[in-house]
Length: 402
Ligand code: FEO
Image (cartoon, rainbow, N blue to C red; front, side, top):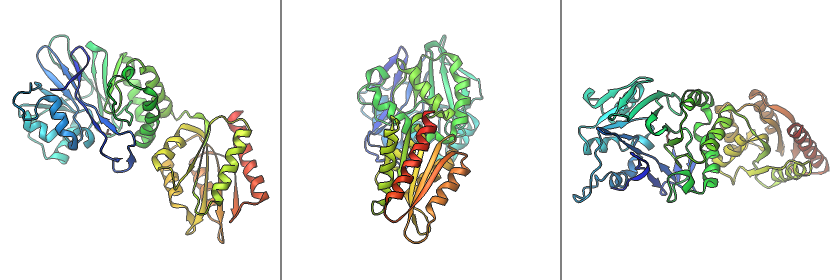
Protein backbone atom coordinates (compact mmCIF):
# COMPACT_ATOMS: atom_id res chain seq x y z
CA UNK A 1 0.00 0.00 0.00
CA UNK A 2 1.45 3.36 -1.00
CA UNK A 3 -1.15 6.01 -0.34
CA UNK A 4 -0.30 9.65 0.18
CA UNK A 5 -2.61 11.47 2.58
CA UNK A 6 -3.76 14.80 1.19
CA UNK A 7 -6.04 15.64 4.06
CA UNK A 8 -7.74 13.50 6.71
CA UNK A 9 -9.52 10.58 5.01
CA UNK A 10 -8.52 11.74 1.51
CA UNK A 11 -5.57 10.01 -0.16
CA UNK A 12 -3.73 10.11 -3.47
CA UNK A 13 -3.19 6.78 -5.23
CA UNK A 14 -2.36 8.01 -8.75
CA UNK A 15 0.69 7.30 -10.85
CA UNK A 16 3.30 9.09 -12.96
CA UNK A 17 3.83 8.27 -16.61
CA UNK A 18 7.35 9.19 -17.74
CA UNK A 19 7.35 6.50 -20.43
CA UNK A 20 4.73 7.61 -22.94
CA UNK A 21 6.10 10.15 -25.38
CA UNK A 22 2.70 11.28 -26.68
CA UNK A 23 -0.58 11.89 -24.86
CA UNK A 24 -3.60 10.74 -26.88
CA UNK A 25 -1.02 9.65 -29.47
CA UNK A 26 -0.65 13.34 -30.36
CA UNK A 27 0.68 15.63 -27.68
CA UNK A 28 4.33 15.46 -26.55
CA UNK A 29 5.06 14.73 -22.90
CA UNK A 30 8.54 16.19 -22.28
CA UNK A 31 7.77 16.39 -18.57
CA UNK A 32 5.63 13.27 -18.36
CA UNK A 33 2.08 13.25 -17.06
CA UNK A 34 0.28 11.98 -13.97
CA UNK A 35 -2.93 10.00 -13.91
CA UNK A 36 -4.51 10.99 -10.63
CA UNK A 37 -6.73 8.73 -8.60
CA UNK A 38 -8.01 9.37 -5.10
CA UNK A 39 -9.36 7.44 -2.13
CA UNK A 40 -12.01 8.90 0.19
CA UNK A 41 -12.56 6.97 3.40
CA UNK A 42 -15.78 7.35 5.34
CA UNK A 43 -16.73 5.75 8.66
CA UNK A 44 -18.50 2.93 6.80
CA UNK A 45 -17.51 2.90 3.15
CA UNK A 46 -14.52 3.78 1.02
CA UNK A 47 -14.64 5.26 -2.46
CA UNK A 48 -11.99 5.31 -5.16
CA UNK A 49 -12.31 8.24 -7.54
CA UNK A 50 -11.17 7.43 -11.09
CA UNK A 51 -8.41 4.97 -11.98
CA UNK A 52 -5.34 5.23 -14.21
CA UNK A 53 -4.09 4.31 -17.67
CA UNK A 54 -4.13 0.58 -18.21
CA UNK A 55 -0.36 0.55 -18.77
CA UNK A 56 0.16 1.91 -15.27
CA UNK A 57 -2.02 -0.62 -13.50
CA UNK A 58 0.94 -2.36 -11.76
CA UNK A 59 2.04 0.70 -9.78
CA UNK A 60 -1.59 1.68 -9.20
CA UNK A 61 -2.22 -1.74 -7.72
CA UNK A 62 0.90 -1.38 -5.56
CA UNK A 63 -0.61 1.83 -4.19
CA UNK A 64 -3.81 -0.06 -3.40
CA UNK A 65 -1.98 -3.06 -1.95
CA UNK A 66 -3.37 -5.48 -4.52
CA UNK A 67 -0.08 -6.37 -6.20
CA UNK A 68 -0.30 -10.06 -5.28
CA UNK A 69 2.16 -9.72 -2.41
CA UNK A 70 0.30 -11.41 0.46
CA UNK A 71 2.13 -9.32 3.07
CA UNK A 72 0.76 -6.06 1.66
CA UNK A 73 -2.16 -4.39 3.37
CA UNK A 74 -4.93 -4.12 0.84
CA UNK A 75 -7.03 -0.95 0.64
CA UNK A 76 -10.69 -1.76 1.14
CA UNK A 77 -12.77 -0.20 -1.64
CA UNK A 78 -16.55 -0.27 -1.83
CA UNK A 79 -17.22 2.19 -4.65
CA UNK A 80 -15.46 3.31 -7.80
CA UNK A 81 -16.64 6.79 -8.76
CA UNK A 82 -16.16 7.37 -12.48
CA UNK A 83 -15.79 11.07 -13.12
CA UNK A 84 -14.31 10.60 -16.58
CA UNK A 85 -14.17 7.68 -18.99
CA UNK A 86 -11.25 8.59 -21.23
CA UNK A 87 -9.01 5.51 -21.00
CA UNK A 88 -6.16 7.37 -19.30
CA UNK A 89 -8.51 7.31 -16.27
CA UNK A 90 -10.65 4.27 -16.89
CA UNK A 91 -8.12 1.82 -18.34
CA UNK A 92 -7.60 0.02 -15.03
CA UNK A 93 -11.33 -0.65 -14.48
CA UNK A 94 -11.42 -4.23 -15.84
CA UNK A 95 -8.48 -5.35 -13.68
CA UNK A 96 -9.81 -3.43 -10.70
CA UNK A 97 -13.09 -5.31 -10.98
CA UNK A 98 -11.21 -8.58 -10.94
CA UNK A 99 -9.33 -7.51 -7.82
CA UNK A 100 -12.53 -6.20 -6.21
CA UNK A 101 -15.39 -8.39 -7.50
CA UNK A 102 -17.89 -6.79 -5.11
CA UNK A 103 -17.04 -3.25 -6.21
CA UNK A 104 -19.95 -0.98 -7.17
CA UNK A 105 -19.24 1.38 -10.06
CA UNK A 106 -20.88 4.72 -9.42
CA UNK A 107 -21.40 6.51 -12.71
CA UNK A 108 -23.91 8.45 -14.76
CA UNK A 109 -25.90 6.96 -17.63
CA UNK A 110 -23.52 8.12 -20.36
CA UNK A 111 -20.48 6.79 -18.51
CA UNK A 112 -22.17 3.43 -17.94
CA UNK A 113 -22.74 3.12 -21.70
CA UNK A 114 -19.06 3.89 -22.31
CA UNK A 115 -17.92 1.30 -19.76
CA UNK A 116 -19.90 -1.28 -21.69
CA UNK A 117 -18.50 -0.15 -25.05
CA UNK A 118 -14.88 0.14 -23.93
CA UNK A 119 -14.63 -2.83 -21.58
CA UNK A 120 -17.65 -5.05 -22.17
CA UNK A 121 -18.80 -4.58 -18.58
CA UNK A 122 -22.58 -4.45 -18.52
CA UNK A 123 -23.89 -6.57 -15.61
CA UNK A 124 -26.51 -4.29 -14.02
CA UNK A 125 -25.56 -5.36 -10.49
CA UNK A 126 -22.10 -3.78 -10.95
CA UNK A 127 -23.51 -0.30 -11.40
CA UNK A 128 -25.01 2.34 -9.19
CA UNK A 129 -26.35 4.90 -11.67
CA UNK A 130 -26.41 8.46 -10.41
CA UNK A 131 -27.92 11.65 -11.75
CA UNK A 132 -26.95 15.27 -11.42
CA UNK A 133 -27.08 16.37 -7.77
CA UNK A 134 -27.33 12.85 -6.34
CA UNK A 135 -25.39 12.04 -3.20
CA UNK A 136 -23.67 8.95 -1.82
CA UNK A 137 -22.97 8.49 1.87
CA UNK A 138 -19.72 6.90 3.02
CA UNK A 139 -20.97 7.09 6.60
CA UNK A 140 -21.91 9.90 8.93
CA UNK A 141 -20.43 13.23 7.90
CA UNK A 142 -18.83 11.93 4.71
CA UNK A 143 -21.11 12.44 1.79
CA UNK A 144 -20.20 12.66 -1.88
CA UNK A 145 -22.26 14.78 -4.24
CA UNK A 146 -22.15 14.40 -8.02
CA UNK A 147 -22.29 17.29 -10.44
CA UNK A 148 -22.71 16.46 -14.10
CA UNK A 149 -20.38 18.67 -16.14
CA UNK A 150 -20.67 17.36 -19.71
CA UNK A 151 -17.96 18.11 -22.28
CA UNK A 152 -15.23 18.86 -19.77
CA UNK A 153 -13.89 17.06 -21.67
CA UNK A 154 -16.19 14.25 -22.86
CA UNK A 155 -20.00 14.02 -22.66
CA UNK A 156 -19.99 11.84 -19.53
CA UNK A 157 -17.68 14.03 -17.47
CA UNK A 158 -18.75 14.91 -13.96
CA UNK A 159 -17.28 16.26 -10.75
CA UNK A 160 -17.53 14.85 -7.23
CA UNK A 161 -17.85 17.13 -4.22
CA UNK A 162 -16.82 16.19 -0.68
CA UNK A 163 -18.35 18.92 1.46
CA UNK A 164 -16.79 17.55 4.66
CA UNK A 165 -13.30 18.36 3.35
CA UNK A 166 -14.24 21.23 1.00
CA UNK A 167 -12.73 19.11 -1.74
CA UNK A 168 -13.77 18.96 -5.39
CA UNK A 169 -12.66 16.13 -7.65
CA UNK A 170 -12.80 17.79 -11.04
CA UNK A 171 -11.77 15.28 -13.69
CA UNK A 172 -9.73 16.95 -16.44
CA UNK A 173 -10.72 20.47 -15.35
CA UNK A 174 -7.75 22.30 -13.78
CA UNK A 175 -5.45 19.53 -15.02
CA UNK A 176 -1.96 20.00 -16.39
CA UNK A 177 0.68 17.96 -18.14
CA UNK A 178 3.79 17.16 -16.11
CA UNK A 179 4.47 14.20 -13.86
CA UNK A 180 4.33 14.93 -10.13
CA UNK A 181 7.95 15.17 -9.04
CA UNK A 182 7.68 14.06 -5.45
CA UNK A 183 4.86 16.29 -4.23
CA UNK A 184 1.17 15.92 -4.86
CA UNK A 185 -0.25 19.19 -3.52
CA UNK A 186 0.76 22.43 -5.25
CA UNK A 187 2.75 23.86 -2.33
CA UNK A 188 5.02 20.80 -2.43
CA UNK A 189 5.89 21.44 -6.08
CA UNK A 190 7.48 23.98 -8.42
CA UNK A 191 4.21 25.43 -9.67
CA UNK A 192 5.88 27.41 -12.46
CA UNK A 193 6.37 24.22 -14.48
CA UNK A 194 2.74 23.19 -13.99
CA UNK A 195 1.48 26.67 -14.82
CA UNK A 196 3.14 26.56 -18.25
CA UNK A 197 1.97 22.97 -18.71
CA UNK A 198 -1.57 24.10 -17.86
CA UNK A 199 -1.59 26.42 -20.89
CA UNK A 200 -0.50 23.53 -23.08
CA UNK A 201 -2.90 21.04 -21.50
CA UNK A 202 -5.88 23.39 -21.65
CA UNK A 203 -5.29 24.53 -25.24
CA UNK A 204 -4.40 21.09 -26.59
CA UNK A 205 -6.99 18.96 -24.78
CA UNK A 206 -9.85 21.06 -23.45
CA UNK A 207 -9.53 24.14 -25.65
CA UNK A 208 -12.53 23.33 -27.83
CA UNK A 209 -14.82 23.19 -24.81
CA UNK A 210 -14.59 26.68 -23.34
CA UNK A 211 -18.36 27.11 -23.01
CA UNK A 212 -18.88 23.79 -21.15
CA UNK A 213 -15.88 24.67 -18.93
CA UNK A 214 -17.54 27.98 -18.08
CA UNK A 215 -20.82 26.18 -17.32
CA UNK A 216 -19.03 23.69 -15.11
CA UNK A 217 -17.18 26.42 -13.25
CA UNK A 218 -20.41 28.35 -12.66
CA UNK A 219 -21.94 25.19 -11.21
CA UNK A 220 -19.03 23.97 -9.10
CA UNK A 221 -17.15 27.02 -7.85
CA UNK A 222 -19.97 28.42 -5.65
CA UNK A 223 -19.51 25.29 -3.52
CA UNK A 224 -16.43 27.01 -2.10
CA UNK A 225 -13.82 24.33 -2.74
CA UNK A 226 -10.55 24.77 -0.86
CA UNK A 227 -8.97 21.72 -2.42
CA UNK A 228 -9.29 20.86 -6.10
CA UNK A 229 -8.20 17.40 -7.18
CA UNK A 230 -7.93 17.05 -10.98
CA UNK A 231 -7.08 13.91 -12.94
CA UNK A 232 -3.71 15.32 -14.06
CA UNK A 233 -1.12 17.48 -12.33
CA UNK A 234 -1.02 18.94 -8.85
CA UNK A 235 -3.82 19.05 -6.31
CA UNK A 236 -4.63 22.73 -6.09
CA UNK A 237 -4.85 24.28 -2.63
CA UNK A 238 -2.42 27.11 -1.89
CA UNK A 239 -2.38 28.18 -5.55
CA UNK A 240 -6.01 27.31 -6.19
CA UNK A 241 -7.11 30.82 -7.12
CA UNK A 242 -4.29 31.08 -9.65
CA UNK A 243 -5.33 27.80 -11.30
CA UNK A 244 -9.01 28.75 -11.32
CA UNK A 245 -8.30 32.17 -12.73
CA UNK A 246 -6.10 30.76 -15.51
CA UNK A 247 -8.80 28.25 -16.51
CA UNK A 248 -11.43 30.96 -16.30
CA UNK A 249 -9.50 33.29 -18.61
CA UNK A 250 -8.62 30.59 -21.10
CA UNK A 251 -12.16 29.22 -21.26
CA UNK A 252 -13.51 32.77 -21.75
CA UNK A 253 -10.89 33.21 -24.48
CA UNK A 254 -9.45 36.23 -22.72
CA UNK A 255 -5.99 36.43 -24.20
CA UNK A 256 -2.80 37.85 -22.70
CA UNK A 257 -0.91 40.77 -24.20
CA UNK A 258 1.75 39.49 -26.53
CA UNK A 259 2.22 38.20 -30.05
CA UNK A 260 2.84 34.71 -31.35
CA UNK A 261 4.46 34.46 -34.77
CA UNK A 262 4.20 31.08 -36.44
CA UNK A 263 5.79 30.47 -39.79
CA UNK A 264 6.64 27.66 -42.11
CA UNK A 265 9.79 27.88 -44.19
CA UNK A 266 11.63 25.57 -46.58
CA UNK A 267 14.75 27.59 -47.36
CA UNK A 268 14.65 30.37 -44.77
CA UNK A 269 12.98 33.19 -46.71
CA UNK A 270 9.63 33.09 -44.87
CA UNK A 271 11.62 32.72 -41.66
CA UNK A 272 13.51 35.92 -42.49
CA UNK A 273 10.20 37.75 -42.79
CA UNK A 274 9.11 36.35 -39.42
CA UNK A 275 12.28 37.61 -37.75
CA UNK A 276 11.85 41.04 -39.33
CA UNK A 277 8.32 41.26 -37.90
CA UNK A 278 9.46 40.03 -34.49
CA UNK A 279 12.22 42.64 -34.25
CA UNK A 280 9.87 45.44 -35.26
CA UNK A 281 7.28 44.35 -32.71
CA UNK A 282 9.91 44.60 -29.99
CA UNK A 283 10.99 48.02 -31.24
CA UNK A 284 7.38 49.09 -31.04
CA UNK A 285 7.17 48.07 -27.38
CA UNK A 286 5.49 44.66 -27.49
CA UNK A 287 7.00 42.94 -24.46
CA UNK A 288 6.13 39.32 -25.23
CA UNK A 289 6.87 37.96 -28.67
CA UNK A 290 7.03 34.20 -29.24
CA UNK A 291 8.31 32.92 -32.58
CA UNK A 292 7.79 29.36 -33.79
CA UNK A 293 9.20 27.70 -36.87
CA UNK A 294 6.38 25.28 -37.63
CA UNK A 295 8.87 22.65 -38.82
CA UNK A 296 10.70 22.82 -35.52
CA UNK A 297 8.18 23.59 -32.76
CA UNK A 298 5.56 20.98 -32.01
CA UNK A 299 1.95 21.60 -32.92
CA UNK A 300 1.28 21.36 -29.19
CA UNK A 301 3.62 24.27 -28.36
CA UNK A 302 2.27 26.36 -31.23
CA UNK A 303 -1.36 25.85 -30.21
CA UNK A 304 -0.45 26.73 -26.64
CA UNK A 305 1.14 30.08 -27.51
CA UNK A 306 -1.38 30.85 -30.26
CA UNK A 307 -4.06 30.36 -27.60
CA UNK A 308 -2.29 32.32 -24.89
CA UNK A 309 -1.49 35.61 -26.63
CA UNK A 310 -3.84 38.05 -28.25
CA UNK A 311 -1.68 38.74 -31.30
CA UNK A 312 -1.21 36.00 -33.87
CA UNK A 313 0.84 36.45 -37.03
CA UNK A 314 1.11 33.49 -39.38
CA UNK A 315 3.38 33.04 -42.37
CA UNK A 316 3.61 30.29 -44.94
CA UNK A 317 5.21 29.52 -48.26
CA UNK A 318 2.86 28.34 -50.98
CA UNK A 319 3.27 24.59 -51.09
CA UNK A 320 1.50 22.50 -53.73
CA UNK A 321 -0.83 25.44 -54.22
CA UNK A 322 -1.75 25.41 -50.55
CA UNK A 323 -0.35 26.23 -47.12
CA UNK A 324 2.84 24.61 -45.85
CA UNK A 325 1.48 21.48 -44.11
CA UNK A 326 2.49 22.25 -40.48
CA UNK A 327 1.05 25.77 -40.84
CA UNK A 328 -2.15 24.28 -42.23
CA UNK A 329 -2.31 21.99 -39.19
CA UNK A 330 -1.99 25.00 -36.89
CA UNK A 331 -4.77 26.90 -38.68
CA UNK A 332 -6.98 23.81 -38.60
CA UNK A 333 -6.36 23.56 -34.86
CA UNK A 334 -7.55 27.14 -34.45
CA UNK A 335 -10.67 26.39 -36.51
CA UNK A 336 -11.69 23.27 -34.60
CA UNK A 337 -11.16 25.06 -31.28
CA UNK A 338 -13.22 27.98 -32.55
CA UNK A 339 -10.58 30.44 -31.38
CA UNK A 340 -11.96 33.97 -31.43
CA UNK A 341 -10.76 37.50 -30.81
CA UNK A 342 -7.24 37.42 -32.19
CA UNK A 343 -5.40 40.43 -33.58
CA UNK A 344 -4.22 38.77 -36.75
CA UNK A 345 -1.84 39.37 -39.61
CA UNK A 346 -0.29 37.06 -42.14
CA UNK A 347 2.34 36.78 -44.81
CA UNK A 348 3.13 34.40 -47.61
CA UNK A 349 5.89 33.45 -49.96
CA UNK A 350 5.83 31.93 -53.41
CA UNK A 351 8.04 31.15 -56.38
CA UNK A 352 5.59 30.98 -59.29
CA UNK A 353 1.96 30.83 -58.11
CA UNK A 354 1.00 32.80 -54.98
CA UNK A 355 -1.68 31.18 -52.80
CA UNK A 356 -0.62 31.11 -49.13
CA UNK A 357 -1.38 34.74 -48.23
CA UNK A 358 -4.91 34.56 -49.61
CA UNK A 359 -5.61 31.25 -47.86
CA UNK A 360 -4.36 32.63 -44.53
CA UNK A 361 -6.39 35.82 -44.97
CA UNK A 362 -9.51 33.79 -45.77
CA UNK A 363 -9.03 31.59 -42.73
CA UNK A 364 -8.49 34.59 -40.45
CA UNK A 365 -11.65 36.21 -41.84
CA UNK A 366 -13.65 33.00 -41.37
CA UNK A 367 -12.57 32.94 -37.71
CA UNK A 368 -13.68 36.56 -37.29
CA UNK A 369 -10.21 37.76 -36.31
CA UNK A 370 -9.23 41.44 -36.57
CA UNK A 371 -7.03 41.40 -39.64
CA UNK A 372 -4.24 43.97 -39.38
CA UNK A 373 -2.82 43.29 -42.84
CA UNK A 374 -0.76 40.95 -44.92
CA UNK A 375 2.01 40.86 -47.48
CA UNK A 376 3.48 38.45 -49.97
CA UNK A 377 7.14 37.86 -50.76
CA UNK A 378 8.29 36.49 -54.11
CA UNK A 379 11.04 34.07 -53.17
CA UNK A 380 13.60 36.21 -51.29
CA UNK A 381 13.16 39.22 -49.02
CA UNK A 382 13.98 42.61 -50.52
CA UNK A 383 13.65 46.16 -49.23
CA UNK A 384 10.01 46.35 -50.17
CA UNK A 385 9.30 43.08 -48.30
CA UNK A 386 11.12 44.47 -45.25
CA UNK A 387 8.94 47.58 -45.43
CA UNK A 388 5.82 45.41 -45.62
CA UNK A 389 6.96 43.33 -42.65
CA UNK A 390 7.49 46.54 -40.65
CA UNK A 391 4.07 47.83 -41.69
CA UNK A 392 2.30 44.66 -40.53
CA UNK A 393 4.23 44.67 -37.26
CA UNK A 394 3.35 48.33 -36.67
CA UNK A 395 -0.37 47.67 -37.22
CA UNK A 396 -0.37 44.68 -34.87
CA UNK A 397 1.61 46.55 -32.20
CA UNK A 398 -0.74 49.53 -32.41
CA UNK A 399 -3.85 47.36 -32.10
CA UNK A 400 -2.35 45.44 -29.19
CA UNK A 401 -1.02 48.40 -27.22
CA UNK A 402 -3.90 50.82 -27.82
FE1 FEO B 1 -7.25 12.88 -18.92
FE2 FEO B 1 -9.99 13.56 -20.95
O1 FEO B 1 -8.71 12.53 -20.02
